[in-house]
Length: 115
Image (cartoon, rainbow, N blue to C red):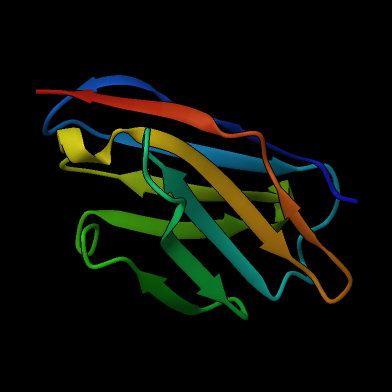
Protein backbone atom coordinates (compact mmCIF):
# COMPACT_ATOMS: atom_id res chain seq x y z
CA UNK A 1 0.00 0.00 0.00
CA UNK A 2 1.26 3.47 -0.85
CA UNK A 3 2.55 5.44 2.11
CA UNK A 4 1.47 9.06 2.43
CA UNK A 5 3.14 11.69 4.56
CA UNK A 6 1.56 15.06 5.24
CA UNK A 7 3.53 18.15 6.16
CA UNK A 8 3.15 21.89 6.35
CA UNK A 9 0.85 22.17 9.32
CA UNK A 10 1.50 24.48 12.21
CA UNK A 11 0.30 27.44 14.20
CA UNK A 12 -0.88 30.50 12.30
CA UNK A 13 -2.85 33.61 13.13
CA UNK A 14 -6.31 34.16 11.74
CA UNK A 15 -6.08 35.56 8.24
CA UNK A 16 -2.83 33.79 7.55
CA UNK A 17 -1.94 31.09 5.04
CA UNK A 18 -0.45 27.62 5.03
CA UNK A 19 0.31 25.11 2.33
CA UNK A 20 -0.06 21.47 3.20
CA UNK A 21 1.81 18.82 1.26
CA UNK A 22 1.06 15.12 0.93
CA UNK A 23 3.99 13.15 -0.43
CA UNK A 24 3.31 9.65 -1.71
CA UNK A 25 5.87 6.87 -1.62
CA UNK A 26 4.90 5.84 -5.13
CA UNK A 27 3.48 7.29 -8.30
CA UNK A 28 0.15 9.07 -8.07
CA UNK A 29 -0.29 9.36 -11.81
CA UNK A 30 -3.01 6.68 -11.76
CA UNK A 31 -4.87 8.18 -8.82
CA UNK A 32 -8.55 8.60 -9.57
CA UNK A 33 -9.48 10.59 -6.53
CA UNK A 34 -7.40 12.67 -4.17
CA UNK A 35 -8.72 14.48 -1.18
CA UNK A 36 -7.97 16.44 1.93
CA UNK A 37 -10.02 15.82 5.03
CA UNK A 38 -9.94 17.28 8.50
CA UNK A 39 -11.03 16.29 11.95
CA UNK A 40 -11.47 18.72 14.80
CA UNK A 41 -11.67 17.55 18.44
CA UNK A 42 -15.04 16.01 19.18
CA UNK A 43 -16.14 16.17 15.55
CA UNK A 44 -16.35 13.72 12.70
CA UNK A 45 -13.84 13.73 9.90
CA UNK A 46 -15.06 15.86 7.01
CA UNK A 47 -14.04 16.33 3.41
CA UNK A 48 -12.34 19.65 2.77
CA UNK A 49 -11.28 19.39 -0.86
CA UNK A 50 -11.13 16.70 -3.50
CA UNK A 51 -9.92 16.27 -7.05
CA UNK A 52 -11.45 13.65 -9.32
CA UNK A 53 -9.71 12.40 -12.44
CA UNK A 54 -7.09 15.16 -12.53
CA UNK A 55 -9.37 18.14 -12.81
CA UNK A 56 -12.84 18.03 -11.27
CA UNK A 57 -12.48 19.72 -7.90
CA UNK A 58 -14.94 19.94 -5.05
CA UNK A 59 -14.74 21.94 -1.87
CA UNK A 60 -16.62 22.09 1.38
CA UNK A 61 -18.80 25.20 1.51
CA UNK A 62 -16.85 26.41 4.53
CA UNK A 63 -13.57 26.63 2.57
CA UNK A 64 -14.71 27.65 -0.91
CA UNK A 65 -12.70 30.57 -2.21
CA UNK A 66 -10.05 30.11 0.49
CA UNK A 67 -8.57 26.64 -0.12
CA UNK A 68 -7.16 25.15 -3.33
CA UNK A 69 -6.22 21.54 -3.99
CA UNK A 70 -3.56 20.72 -6.57
CA UNK A 71 -1.23 17.91 -7.56
CA UNK A 72 2.27 17.54 -8.95
CA UNK A 73 2.68 14.13 -10.53
CA UNK A 74 6.39 14.63 -11.08
CA UNK A 75 6.83 15.00 -7.32
CA UNK A 76 4.11 12.49 -6.37
CA UNK A 77 2.65 15.18 -4.15
CA UNK A 78 -0.78 16.63 -3.48
CA UNK A 79 -1.12 20.11 -2.03
CA UNK A 80 -3.71 22.09 -0.15
CA UNK A 81 -3.18 25.84 -0.26
CA UNK A 82 -5.09 27.46 2.58
CA UNK A 83 -5.63 31.20 2.79
CA UNK A 84 -7.65 33.54 4.99
CA UNK A 85 -7.53 30.95 7.72
CA UNK A 86 -10.07 31.08 10.52
CA UNK A 87 -9.99 29.62 14.04
CA UNK A 88 -12.68 27.15 12.96
CA UNK A 89 -10.19 25.69 10.46
CA UNK A 90 -8.25 24.27 13.39
CA UNK A 91 -8.05 20.49 12.98
CA UNK A 92 -5.85 17.59 12.03
CA UNK A 93 -5.69 17.45 8.24
CA UNK A 94 -5.38 14.15 6.40
CA UNK A 95 -4.80 13.37 2.76
CA UNK A 96 -6.36 10.44 0.93
CA UNK A 97 -5.44 9.01 -2.44
CA UNK A 98 -7.56 6.45 -4.24
CA UNK A 99 -6.15 4.40 -7.11
CA UNK A 100 -7.87 1.58 -9.00
CA UNK A 101 -6.48 -0.89 -6.44
CA UNK A 102 -6.28 0.87 -3.09
CA UNK A 103 -7.17 3.78 -0.85
CA UNK A 104 -4.38 5.25 1.25
CA UNK A 105 -4.41 7.69 4.16
CA UNK A 106 -1.69 9.72 5.75
CA UNK A 107 -1.11 10.13 9.48
CA UNK A 108 -2.29 13.73 9.52
CA UNK A 109 -0.82 17.14 10.21
CA UNK A 110 -2.08 19.56 12.84
CA UNK A 111 -3.28 23.00 11.81
CA UNK A 112 -4.00 25.48 14.58
CA UNK A 113 -5.40 28.94 13.82
CA UNK A 114 -5.29 31.46 16.63
CA UNK A 115 -7.72 34.35 16.88
